Length: 610
Image 1: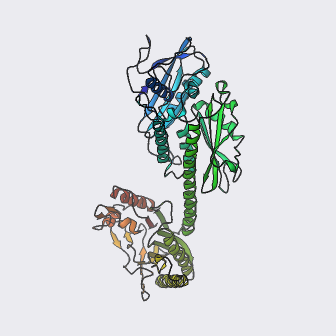
Image 2: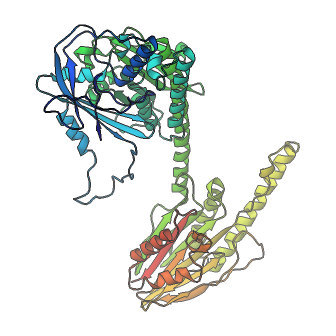
Image 3: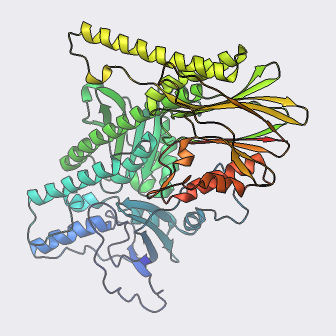
């Protein structure tokens, strides 16, 4: 609900100083609005009204000294309405902007556009678990520029308060010593570390940094990042600095400040390390009430590598207090570590995506007379999956398909998939029959495992027995469903075999479901294994469902999805549906079976004779 600042002027409840305790709102006289306070405002004088943070610190100082502040000269006071709305649960479901939305869908952000249109000054501040939107509405004679500058509280430090007092926790009127002030700084750094820790996007780290700094430590903040990307979509220079984030206490100033700062990126000497470096004051972007001030830049360095710069500024003072510069320097180190961790994650994620694309087919072949539908959902979005699929032409009027599941995940699984899928295509196109393809692939995996073990043993001997204990032989085996399709008159002839894989199911138009393969041993386990196959004909309307164990072994407590032929029962209910609808319905039923997201990779392939 709207909150009002009774006398000291509005201010966002951000920083380490909590908002003043709720109490009765002074009667503003006839015509006042319930829940809002008509705030008297002074005419332009050298000192502006303090923010709530500065007001809290000033109240603490007055309580300790046992006196009251000199109200100063009496000036003509004008009126304005100040509104603050705090949200203690600032979250909502993440939207997929790429997906089409219905015409009547909620369009987020209209409220802020209304605030911007009606108010002279407004902004957003954040604390852990709280988001506050403030706005100042003009009342009759108050000029717009004066309202904006009066709200910002840009000259709080000029009123005699020390910077550390503004950062400190709620005032303790009985003590006010250096130890108490240090605890305020430590609590701020602890909050910053908690907020930045675990962030995996460098632009999000830059945005959070701005919210931490403004308005607690400065009036505005800018974060520059050295771009490591091989190219930029916005046309910027490769490898040069980019302005990742600009944050100001007043939203009205942000765009103009950004345009001005982008023209002159900071060039900091290496000798500065992470210490403060004076910067030119951007007076042209901050209005007439902020013609002078102090700006400092701090290099962002992690692991000896420069990552960018953090720039802060405050109007109305010629330098920052030592407490502020020391605190921002400590904060800049934490920001640099968070950016470095985010970049490392981004590099690994990029490698994994490229590797994943190389392990899967770029497109699924279209088969004459056969409709196909595929569902592929890796459990780990940031690394290679253990499941793989393929559907490709093999020549001479044949098309082959495969659905496999490798032991393990990540790089180990990628090695096996990198062997299996190319060899499947090569053997199929060389004209080998389905059983022969499985026999040769089984031998290939066994030979590769033996060579890997020999190489590990030689490396162990060369190191004098000091090799890593996990560098010994590794079993590289997989389950595979492999088949061949040949369009014939009146249908499609299908030949397939299962090597340790969940058996495929055939759905007929009548709703009857049956298994169409025999269980056999995994590939890459036994040298003397011999594989067979089965052949049948797909009539128009018949559908084959092929799945990995991520479907059959989907768990809900002690139960699995395929217990008591659960998959066959689910497929029976798909009679009359096309291939795409069958795949989507099975996927939905698998997801709805458990209360939690699937913990294993999920892949299914539907082939339907037209």
